[in-house]
Image (tube, rainbow, N blue to C red):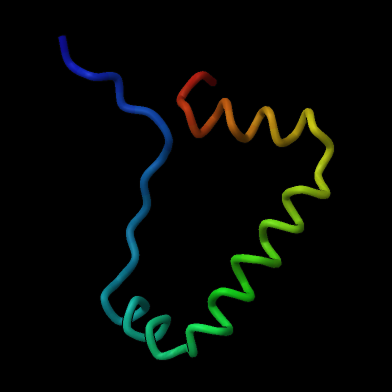
Length: 58
């Protein structure tokens, strides 16, 4: 039986990847940290919906 595909996909061009790689690692890590803080500020119900979506349950 084939494994059910879950989550989502997207395409990023090599040009965009190179542009991102040129950004200092400290700034990229700060973006990740800030994004995590933002997500933790969401209501629990929203975070649970996001998690279900990522797992392919909805």
